[in-house]
Length: 306
Ligand SMILES: Nc1ncnc2c1ncn2[C@@H]1O[C@H](COP(=O)(O)OP(=O)(O)O)[C@@H](O)[C@H]1O
Ligand SMILES: O=c1ccn([C@@H]2O[C@H](COP(=O)(O)OP(=O)(O)O)[C@@H](O)[C@H]2O)c(=O)[nH]1
Image (cartoon, rainbow, N blue to C red):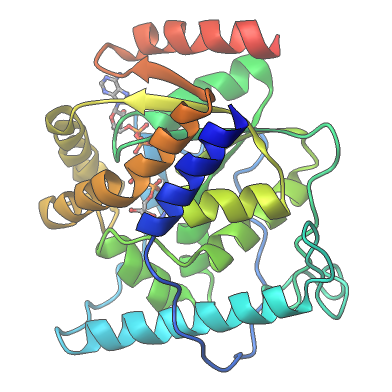
């Protein structure tokens, strides 16, 4: 089992995109704690992730020339955070900044990525865009007392935070269906985990890329299982276009949806394959009404977490 896992991991890493280029470290802002943590079905039973569309502040789109420059700048900035972060790491499992993460509120630049408390349970909730991850998570929160953390919601909150230097970058990545550099997402997740005070987490929509999975598990916590909501693209497309009628999300439109599907196929699905090879994936078909999907999901949680 271990050697199969190791070889699967090596193969996937070989397919992972190259690291971002290095750049100078910029001064980094305070990260506000997300509002929906403990019970707030971040996605809402009917609106799903679209719920996070409230407060959506579409920004003027970049021109064709600006876009690659913004992506490059964003990548460089995030990369700088990563290298700074890695360079200061005194041990493999713990990365500590020069000052306390709690000094004057957590900041990305000063953030200490502490491992999660012993006894913490993390379930990664994966599936294509619009499969129904958020909808099912909201039900699980009610019945099993998990804290629901949607990585997408956390990124949208950070994007909307006045003064965030990541706002434009996050917005561009989301609109383009690309994956925001993991340094930002892992930091936001870790802050949300510690602020929640909880011990059991549904980490929804993350990891979307193999290196994110490995880094999160190295720094924060191993996942207990991976709940995979399987859904054909045509069904997800229908659901997303419907959600787009009210979500106000910058990416619930046909152009962005196509790009998100491509990213899911090429970059995120391999994460599911990796966890499947090591026996961690629990697959649920989403091609049924919400209640029926939930009945199957619930059975898995009854067995594992009751
Ligand atoms: N089983 C289902 N059948 C029909 N519609 C669904 C189902 N599950 C979710 N939806 C709807 O599809 C859309 C996407 O669901 P959501 O939970 O937001 O997906 P995700 O979090 O995976 O993007 C929402 O509008 C939601 O109400
Ligand atoms: O770990 C994550 C989670 C989300 N996203 C970005 O946020 C978007 C929306 O993700 P979310 O999970 O909210 O929505 P879904 O695509 O599942 O409907 C994605 O397409 C990515 O651009 C990201 O970069 N990293």
